[in-house]
Length: 287
Image (cartoon, rainbow, N blue to C red):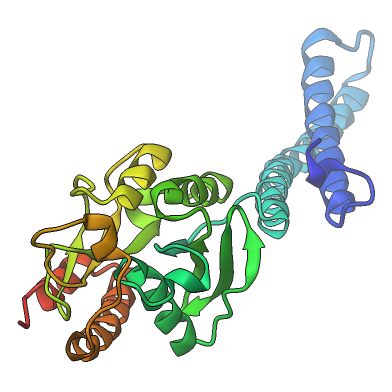
């Protein structure tokens, strides 16, 4: 049911009044034109005919003035319905414009805290702390928190599906809030091809061997979304799983902490629509 047309909804009276008034004015105008076309007066004296013509012109002038008012009422009626439906969808969470989804990837549980693979979790925690956003609500297979960053409404999430299934949560948020991944999604993840301290920002592209990004691409249906990848040391040999589930050595931790701050600043630029500027400023290697 269209909520704006439901009795008891706030704009129902205005909608109903403007609609009825417009239709009544149109009906009067149409009836007047019909009577003029299909009826004539026979046997009237010249004086009566003259008076009738004068009276008819006055009535025609008055009715003509009602036509713009009728049109205005119809326009008002349409605007009320359109904008109130948007407000209803906003309040119900079914439709939100100008919102960004920022996802930090990682694995849930104390066992995986601050491991290389949880670089996304650590970065989004830093962003949340900077802007006073609490990421604690459990929804859509993630912990989430809503807030505002530099005037932009954001949802910060930490998928709880484990890394390889991150797309189940991210895709669910994108679909529920009707977001455009290309312009309203930012993902923080780790990168084993970069030294700790470096970050790499991309607007699109393949997952580059990262299973979390691969799963997101599958669930949102496109590889066109911004990802900010944080270096966690270059993997050279051995078991990849052991490497990404280990923690950074102390000498690299300080570089990673600085990289998190730079990644947050990059996200701020991206929220302002300056993706290319963020890439130019932060993609340069520092070590």
